[in-house]
Amino acid sequence: MRRPVALRLQAALGTLALAAAAGVVLTMPETASAAAGGATGYATQNGGTTGGAGGQTVRATTGTAIHQALCGRASSSTPIVIEVEGTINHGNTSKVSGDSCNTAADKIELKQVSNITIVGVGSGAVFDQLGIHIRESSNIVIQNVTVRNVKKSGSPTSNGGDAIGMESDVRNVWVDHSTLEASGGESEGYDGLFDMKDNTQYVTLSYSVLRNSGRGGLIGSSESDRSNGYVTFHHNLYENIDSRAPLLRGGVAHMYNNHYVSLNKSGINSRAGAKAKVDNNYFEDSKDVLGTFYTDEAGSWQVSGNIYDNVTWSEPGGDNNPAGPNPQSNTTVSIPYSYTLDDASCVPSVVSGTAGANKGLKVSDGSCTPQSPDPTDPTDPDPTDPDPTDPDPTDPPSGTNLSIGAGSDGSSKASGTSYGNVRDGDMSTYWSPSGTTGSVSVKWSSARTVAKINIREASGSQGTIGSYRVLNHDTGAVLASGSGAGVIAFSPVSLEKITFEITGASGTPKVAEFETYAG
Image (tube, rainbow, N blue to C red; front, side):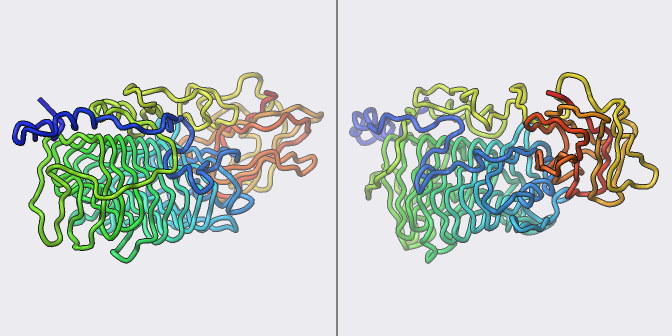
């Protein structure tokens, strides 16, 4: 039978049973924090974290397309929601340059930018051996993605071996419902799953899975790097992690309702003056889950309501100061935001039902029962929820394709292709520009009302198209812009000629069909 450690200590010491029974649930603010689509924890402070809310939504199926979406914005702070589907890797990620971006070929680079959401949709988003790097940036949301097997040595390497790494004056980041995983420790080429350093503040990691890594993550790169902090970790699963769950140097962190399983060497390592508030977590089959380890520069902690199930503790001494076997608070931490705690006894089941990518963004409201997200949540990755801006080519608009029987022209065409191929209803024929950029138009002898187009890439070239603009050729007005092929919606407009302009691509685009619809 699994029992809180205080109850097991009762058998040996004859004390603490009443305290342990009463300590499982804390008296905390009643306001629930975990609302679908909204940041929680410290990410709600310092003005809040909304990512690209209110901005254009674009679809990306390659790393290059993600970079193109960043570079296609009017400025480095123009809000944007980038929906990602498919596997992002070194083979489809290249550096893109522009006034609104600063990218790199070996990682997803969010540098000197703000107001961005990256969210996995459809069948899921997997960043395979390719890390996400956030530097000198603010107001970033990363949701419903998997990042796996990012290496700092061996081949290929990316992001210093961090799945998600933040450094250099980063503010307000919310990572939610994501899966971060490795396949070993430093000797196998991996580093941290979730690292923050060099003045990174106001971060929340929620409903996520971190597993199979030597290092879960750190806050502060050295004992002197104490400018980081105000980080919340809640409803996460840490599984098969050697240490750093997390390592905290300086600053303040709040860990609540997390499930820690198989922390092999140490867990929450509060050191170098750090303060950790540790509430209603479930620690299981682990060693030294809380304390100051590997240094004589101590940190501190405030604990309440935690369950320690089959946890072992080392002897204190020198640079080793475990909080157990009977963890007690040695500091107090004031939390500025509202939150509601699940009872620690139900944390394993709640976290199992909510944490990680492709779990439907389920959350907890403190009732020990996973809750479905608000169906109006704009980041809901449910592909069955129709979205007029969703460019999924498998869900084309209804009605008559106005391109059939129309005319067409464009800026250039590759040898052997024809403008007419984009309006013949035949997916086996296509138009290609003479390079990676170019434009193709559909035109009529009299005005037509158009509200949606569907750009369908030829077989074998899906994901090649990067940034684009849709133009009213009659007036020159930009009707839409974004990244990636598929359905593109805009306000209905009456025109005689509409142009799809490809401004960036990862290779030679092949447009099999340029469909046009009235609604």
